[in-house]
View 1 (cartoon, rainbow, N blue to C red):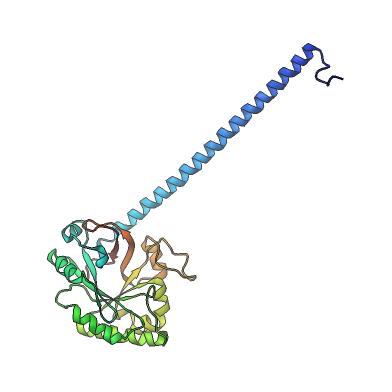
View 2 (cartoon, one colour):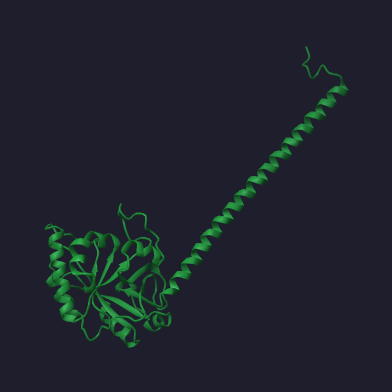
Length: 283
């Protein structure tokens, strides 16, 4: 027995065959058109996304020039620095690591201090404070190694909880030791110290330490970069790049802002922290 198609006459078979080909030709054309349409939409959306990112980058660049005074903070990790090139790259001030804890002295501090002063840069020194150690002894260590006549910026207390030791006595003990350190530094250098801190550390010590000092007792140097915090309370503030956003976190209290920790500056091989001063004249 023949199939239904085979039982038809030749002319009818040809007619149906042509009809079948014509029908599938239209389906093929429709599928090709659909593929082209989908590809066009995909490319359009991709281009829009790229344009959005580029516009965001342009906006960031427009924000940063509002800060006229730019500086860096350095330590032995930056190696040998050409301070002449640093100054030529529109850098006005430098904070150099001096000491840490009870006995560490940054091996590049003396060299950085002398070379920076030779280029007439504003130079400051910072102490990385160890929360598990005696505050008064840390202050004495800093004072011993930082000649007040060789720095042109206030001394800096670097207060961070990240990669720091913590006291078994608790945060109350840590705060008392911090106050000892702060007061000794303030009295010796006869100026208002700068406190550098990350936002999570700032909030942890806000009530016990910062508010006990009073806003008029110190200058705040805030770290707000795209990798500055690991906290459930502030996890939504990564990637901050403008003053509007930083004000939402610490209001109007900051004087220095560490805005970048992977920046490039002439005269330095590798990344370096870049900071902005909020004002017309450095303290």
